Image (cartoon, rainbow, N blue to C red; front, side, top):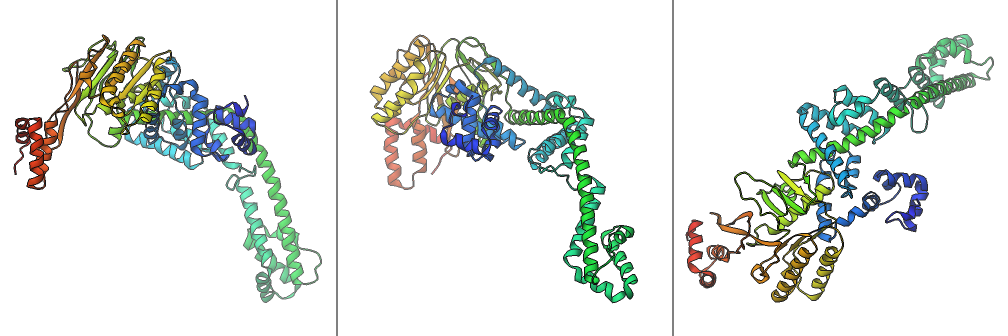
Length: 584
């Protein structure tokens, strides 16, 4: 495959990759999902990520049928990435995409569940050991050496079961030999300091002699001030050089010239001969060591590659496990029939923001959900019209269903006590837009209708369609959209305040409602976010007007709000004020 055949790679990007990596290595990086290699070659991280998502996600990315669905997907990746234990795991998380085959979803889900069980079973001390091992792996630049060290640390902590099982198959002796070789060889193929005592000694001695050569005057003055005659000068010189460099006195004497014009020349020739000899000895020793280390490295190459793969795979699995544990995610059940149902689902974005979350139970389609002590969603309705109070969580419910469906099709557990889902080919999530003009209406229809008319299963999650056109036309269009959803055998939840104008609904559709229940003592709207099935929710404006009356800053303003109170029902407004224990 040529580089240009990958999504997002045009002539300019191709030339950049070829120049810095070569075509073969660039293709290898794309196929292996190696974000770091592509960014090191000069690609911006965001572009590299998008290229790899398309390279590995392919047609499965079509499930993100709208901009809002794509935004939910990106937000989920951002949150999951916060639980990554290495930079490499972060990169791999950011290129996770929905999967095209249910079997692949099940396989990844099983891996994450195993990792979750392994992670949860660890003591706090062992969890810290794991995190520190991966931190050091990052600090080592995610190198082969870092991977081998991480594998050794985890094995030393007896972490070889569950998600860590690949480490059990690695040879401890081979890893030790590999670490010795990796620690001993520098990137330039030279031998590193500390790899061999004799080589270190030779290098130190050479460095000392070179320093003496650079400043011979000081040594010469010391010798001449204490020595009398040539013989004594030679003896003093030999002792001084040997003392400074730890060289054997005999070797220093052997380096002395037979003849020299003066003391300076004698000292210079001695130091030059010593330096040349030490340099030759060090080079010879380094060559010998390099050959030994390279042999060890070649012998351990398979174990090194397996260690790298194991550490990187475990890092990704542990990262996903930590995300699943933090949000108490559970494995969904994939069903052959059309269904999208959840029991006690929690919105990931609200949980991440630290908001209080009321779990929601909801379903469309054929399900077998059961909820202890609570109403079960009716069975069989493939489409619902969701009505109710402003700020009642209707949009959040749509977003939660989108999160659940996306996570499941990415092969990840979902934020619900249980979930029954059918794999869909498109998720049409459309949030409410404030604009009100023909252009917005046209673009919205172009966004939500074509995916519905294509073959294959679609999940429609559409919020307040009436916000983009006048109410009369909006009701007609929304009724048509609900009818089309039913006719195409799709699943759908449509949020609207126009439920009464949509009657009669098709047989496979129902209306559900969310209700405001009153005001709190702080005059905050109190809402039961759990929809009530087969009933129209009401906005209950008396609660809002009651709060405005209570918060009025002067008599004139209050009188104005009291006029509105008469319109919506003065007795109802007064009752909510009493319930909220409001007094002047």
